[in-house]
Length: 161
Image 1: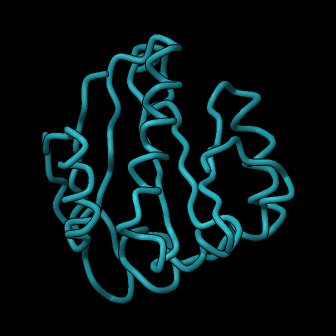
Image 2 (image 1 turned 90 degrees about the vertical axis):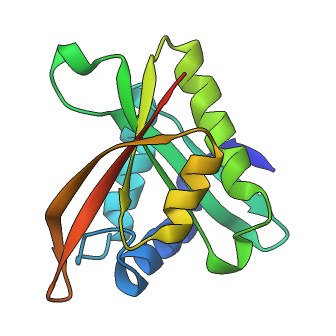
């Protein structure tokens, strides 16, 4: 089931997010999110017009997705960037696709023109996932991230909604 996240989902969303931070280069951050930070995101993003959706099954929350303005100034107000994350055991079950459908539908209904995905070049699953959803690679930003002593390339993918 895909639904809007609530504050009660914060511990599970945090666990998913932090696993992505600690166990992969899918997220370039090296600092885990605190429960308070995740609760703040769950409160503030929807207030700003950017909902957070969760995928839930019998295990509880198994993934989340959201979007936000790509860059801060008003010239970018029709271009958004997405975030999507799943528990490893929930990958390949259709949750990611359903979460992205919810994100894209919401964005489209709000007049968003395009969606950007910033994907680590070392994340072939993420690149293939977005490509399967119709995202095209538009740029690679070499050595733009640094994690675990390694320089990482960021691939920007875009889909017109």
